[in-house]
Image (tube, rainbow, N blue to C red):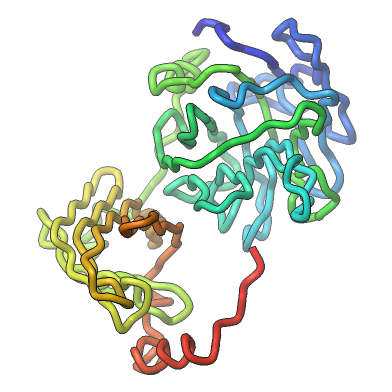
Length: 352
């Protein structure tokens, strides 16, 4: 693949030198040489998840209109609850002045996330990561569209703004704060930054570089009927689906259990676990018709979905990780009365 647009490259072959020729060399703090995805020693770096990281300061200049990052990671076993394991970040964590919070390639509930700290959902990988195996991760920003790839495959896209900062350090293996759960635990290799938007073909070439082939992950999507039934979280049913081997039918939750909407068109790919649901929902406030699209993937008895409701003045969207165990909360958890009371007395705000 051509080095067109390459502004920084860290192959991590025993050091954190910038091999792009740009001169943005990194400083290693505690991380130690490790084995890469081809089994070659001293060709990646291991991070202990406690205080290891690499810092690049000053950082390479990022193009606000077209920017891409590519990196390889291998996770060590660790508690993956909530936010953990920052892979790459240009982010000082200051919510009062977010000008230095540019991007964060991190992990949430075992899913890799292109986190941008803005008023829109984050692109999220539609499958969980597994410890002990290498993953290629690519984040792309192109004229306000943010794309996330995993192992050479496009997983998610979100349209929203993007900004840059000329002096906020670039960190490999941590966020720009000392929050312990953001330190990466595992191996990182081949970090590349581009001042252009990588296309699907570019991403695939990077994934197959050196003749690499990813191991085949065992899934359960071809066993019996893996999809039919209730899917939810925290005792609340979000999806109630029926799969007949061809089409998917059922209902989805539109804001609360008192407002369910029919699935007009549903597809499920048993070979990949990919799910897509479409339809229209009745707006809870004025009964207007709101088109929706839900896209996700079933793996390891969980469905990771992005739900988008196209309201007249704006788009509501969010990421959800659903399973069957957490969908059965009883009549009260799923009652319209409970949700009307929550709206009447106010909801407890959850810190992001």
